[in-house]
Length: 249
Image (cartoon, rainbow, N blue to C red; front, side):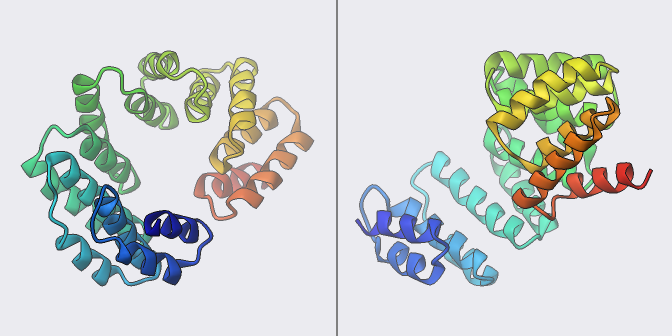
């Protein structure tokens, strides 16, 4: 009961209350989840050293639990915008468990934000080797290529595989729309991006949808989509960059 109370308080943003309930869970099937929950709450409260110290005291019962602890520490550091430290934590963990798909995938995402495209590609290709059915690895690699306007045939193939594995995922639909736009097919891209936006009103999806609409001359609708996207995540870098680039023309 304490664990579920903690989750409820956490979802409401009542962090001190959530922390109290998480810490009250000292055994049972939710023990590990409560320990990780307490650490992530501490991180969101700005108590990052305390959060990391709490995680260092967790004793994992299996390799899977050790991966969960590592990912929790990475989340604390990501929330604190310390991407370099998060990357280093994953690097150390991967030196012990080099073929963990979860750790490889997480490091790939952080590597992209740090400009380490070589690590992004290397890790995602390894994830695909280990788990050919990992839709998000196919999608992340394909989107990364498409966003950089590189090897668009390969990008399309990767995203097509991801879409076959997870046909209704809004983020994969967004990637398909984006790679089609990069390939000079805006009308076809628009179909996928509208489906993605209907599935998830996400700021980055809105940025892409608005850009395609803008390119097709549907500028009032593009502005409307961007305005709605700003309400979702006003600080999204992709959205802000897209609007700045197109609206100043």
